Image (cartoon, rainbow, N blue to C red):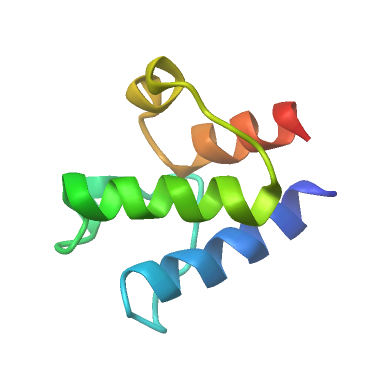
Length: 79
């Protein structure tokens, strides 16, 4: 799976989890950019990403993520 395909999938996941069709997953996107992105929605987001890509994250991996670019890189590394 290419990086662009990962971002396409992440965009769809973000739009679903945050119920906002205008969202686009970009490398610079952070939780601070989305008002609805709180700890509960972060949990839903990570579970949805894991299920979609059929991968698992550790709590430490999730805790280190600073933006969507780092999430995409982590996904790519696990595929």
